[in-house]
View 1 (cartoon, rainbow, N blue to C red):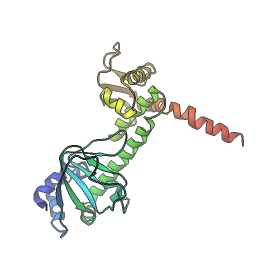
View 2: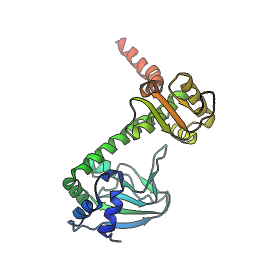
View 3: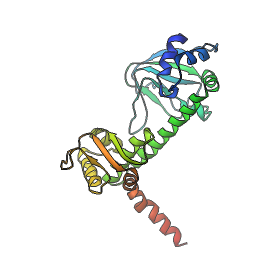
View 4: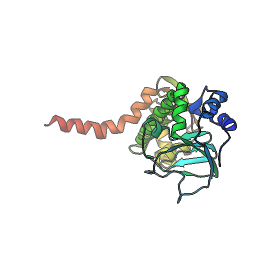
Amino acid sequence: MAVQVQGFAGSLARCLDFTGVSPEEIESVLAESALPLEMEVASPSAESPLIRSGSAFTHLIFVQHGLVVPWQVPHSELGAPFLIGAHEFLMKAERWSASYSAITESVVVRIPQEVMLNIVERIPPVRERMHELLMRRFSRFYWVSMATSGSPASRVAAALVSRLALDDRDFGRERTIAVRQKDIGRLTTMSRSAVAAGMAELAEAGAITWGDATSARFKGEVEVPDVELLKEQAFRDVREREIGPLIAGRGKD
């Protein structure tokens, strides 16, 4: 189904990649292209993904309504409005690097690469914003990878830093993170009791506080006095168990 440029420009302007750009500016650029914007309804499916890794990258996918997830562990939910394909577009990739499925009935719009190229050339802040968001997501993926192995405390610390990284706040002091215990469990792939033990150890080390100072119950809002201290807790296992032995082994050569 072909997309009406006027209405679509307003939807695209609400996407994070287009922060600060007016719908009128987007509409003006879109109107110049002879290539169609195609809308489709994506049904929830694990057997027939919306995007399949290794397939040709010809269009970016704009999630206008609904919820899409990449095939990864832990999973990440991409709710509308969300632009998929910025990584491939900026890297000039020929193929998709990951697979994605809709998990609710979703309305998506396929934007040809040529159309997006014209947008970023005519509206340079869009490319800059896409790059900024991409780097934040890379940083988050790095910290999430740290959250899947090691002690409960180091894994919880890495999961908390990953939440800060997504908002470009993984530095400085006096940070607040709104996150549920079950979300930390999802990121760390640990049980509720293991997450609670990790939280308690981080609190004892002074890396975090939460709720009332005398309460052992996780309230859903974590205070981080110093992000560097929290990162030190996240790095503890990899530094002692991985990097340390590698350096010691090299020293014997």
